[in-house]
Length: 188
Image 1 (cartoon, helix red, strand yellow):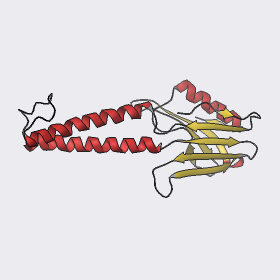
Image 2 (cartoon, rainbow, N blue to C red; image 1 turned 180 degrees about the horizontal axis):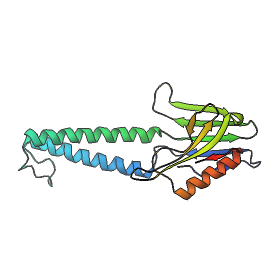
Image 3 (cartoon, one colour; image 1 turned 45 degrees about the horizontal axis):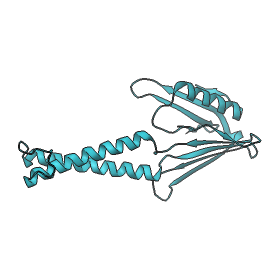
Image 4 (cartoon, rainbow, N blue to C red; image 1 turned 90 degrees about the vertical axis):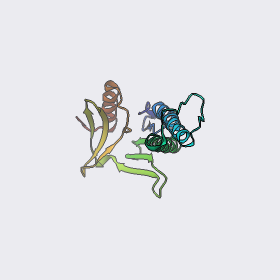
């Protein structure tokens, strides 16, 4: 999600803050995955021990082989996925900013990645290297609405975060605003 652009008093510098993994939907999916994985894991362990660990889980009809093993496996996978989501959220993977500086004629793009040697992704371009702003719209079952910075050497750098599609009107407004600010054409 692109937050409202922040401009300095002289309107020569523009910051677009990019929301990373710290979205409400990620918090909800983390809770659902953790609770589901925990439920499956406890049910599988209960079937192995032949003891009801939680009073509302009935294991009378669940034998450890094959149902209990499968439930334990699915529970472990669910718990591992929830740990991965917690790590993603705490590291704010994908978060960062886009900075457009008319004083220096420079664009800085910064994103946070996974903790490796190159956790911080930093790209810098001069205004003269920018060919256009591209608006990519794909509707259907998995809609994509993204803004790209197109350079003269044929690179396309995404400026919006990948994930939930933004509203059509807001993404179009953002693309037009950015192309006018940078004084470059808008592709579709």
